[in-house]
Length: 511
Image 1 (tube, one colour):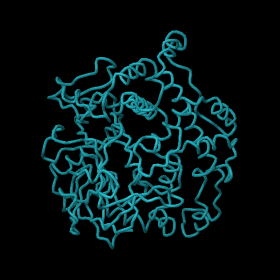
Image 2 (tube, helix red, strand yellow):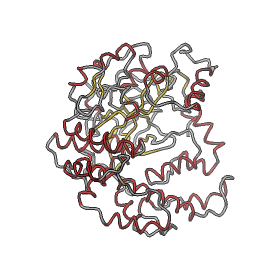
Image 3 (cartoon, one colour):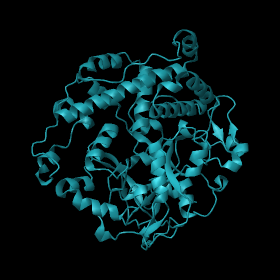
Image 4 (cartoon, helix red, strand yellow):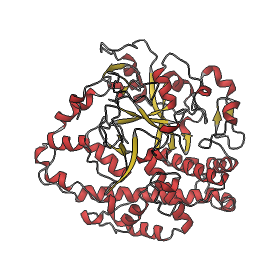
C-alpha cells in the first residue's frame, strides 16, 4: 500500500536524491512536506537484537517476551544464541532477520571462543558483519565490498559510503597530528569557526588545534586497530579449518585469543602501519565491510517497560541506574497539556541494530527537520492502549522518516545521528570521533555565533519538557494516510518516551 514511499525514484512524491558537490549524495524535498508527514519507509538489509537483550526480545518481530508468554519462547537448538516468541516467528523468513545455518554455525563459534573478548559495540559489529556475509552466501551473491560504487541510490551494502580510505591514510601519517596530519574528510574543517570565535565567550580568541587534532588522530588510529582485531576474529570464525586448529593450539588457559593492544599513542603509528601493510586482500575486503557498517548502522530503540527489564534483563543494573529510574517514576509533570498522567512508566532502550541502505543517505543536523521512527514503536506511540500484535504489522523493523515541521521545496532533509541534549562541544566531539566530520549545521553555527543562550530556548521548545525524557524532539501527530498532500497538520506532538502530548512551536519560533 505504501510501496511508493520505499524509494526515491519518480514514484515518491515527496523527496529525491541529489548529488551535491563537496557533500555527495543528499536527500531533498521535491515539494512542500507538511509537518507530521511520513514520506519515506525503509526495510533493513540486516537487523539483529543486541546480545544484552537476546533473552528478552524476539529475533523476528522485536517483541519483548511477556511474563505470560515465557513458556512459548523458542531458542535456536544449534547456536543457543537466537530466541523467538513463537514458532510463527521462527519460521517467518524475512531476509533481514533470517537465521541461516551458516550464521548459526558461526554464532556457535563466536559464543564459545570470542564472546568475552570484546566490548558490546564490537560484539554487535561482528555479529552484523557475520549476518551480512551469511545472507550473501545464502542468496549465492558475491562477497566483495572493496570496490567503490557509483550507484546513486544504494541497492546493496557495497553501495554504502565508508571511511576506509581515510582510516588508512590517517594511519600512514606517522603521528603528524597537526593540521597537515589529518587528511580528506578527517581533516579539521573548523578553521573558519575558530577565526570567528570572538563572539563566543566560551572560546579562546587564539584557537590552537594541535592538541585536539592529536586526540582525534589517536582516536581514529585506535578505532582502526580495533577494526583490524575484528577482521582477524571474523576470518577465524568463517574459516572452519583455522578455527579447529585454534581450538587446540591457539587458546590460552583462560580460553582467550591473543589480541593487539588497542591503546595507541603518538609513537605507535609505525606499528599500526605495519599491521595495515600485513593485511591480505581478504582482510581488506572484510575491513571495508566493517567501515561501511560502522558508518551507516542504526540503533533499534524499543519501548521497554521498566518491570520487563527488572524481571528479565540478565545484566545487573547499577545503583545509579536504579536511582535514576526512581527519580523518573517520582517526577510530576505539571504541563497542562498532559493527557496521559496515569500511564505505565516506560523507557526507550537501544536494544538492537540494523543496516538500512537507503536510510543511510540522510545527513545529520543537530536540529533536524525530520526524525526516524521504528514501525514497532510507531504502533505503540499511536495506540498506547492497544496491545502489540506483531502478526498484524507488515514489518515491525521498518523505519519511517517523519517531517518534524513544515518543509519547503528544495530543502535538504536531515535527521540526527546522536542524542541532542548535550553541549555543542560534546556533539562536535562525538560526530567527529565516530563519523569523521565537523558539524556545521544551523544550530551549531548559530550557537557559535550567538551563543547557546540564543539557540537552546528555541531547541527546547521542540522537545518534551520532562527532564527524564532527555529533551527528545516531539513527533507530530502522524496522519494515517501518508499520501494525502494536505497542508493542515496537527498542532500537537508526542514524546516518543513518555508518550505525552504537547503543543508544538510555530514556524516563527524555529531556528
